[in-house]
Amino acid sequence: QVRLVESGGGSVQAGGSLTLSCATTGLAFNSVCMGWFRQGPGKEREGVAAIHTSGSTLKYADSVKGRFSIAKDNAQNTLYLQMDRLKPEDTATYYCAADRFYCGFLPLNYNTWGRGTQVTVSS
Image (spheres, rainbow, N blue to C red):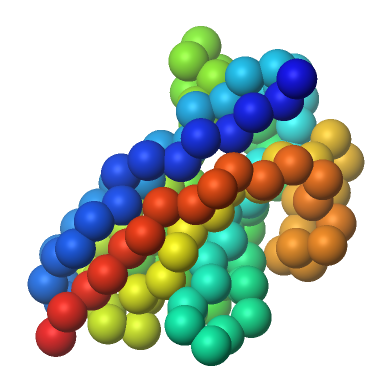
């Protein structure tokens, strides 16, 4: 059974940093597409960063380029999102998702999701 568990969320002031983790079980982690998404209050879920764990694909939303970095540890079957220079508009519940083939930013195309971790950025 595939399972994704996010952690690392919290409350920070603007300009601060957080590192999110997504621990996975049941995945062929060395050959899968994984994405970080977020959903703010009253907003639709949006893609933040995506990666194929082989390293063949890496993409970021324009809103986070230069501030967020997605990384993976194939030995630990864990995905990370390093978030620097956080802004109040980054406040959201952050989710990781996995799909065997799709590495984009359309949430409906991912077939496995975690439950999310809350990130709150105060001004």
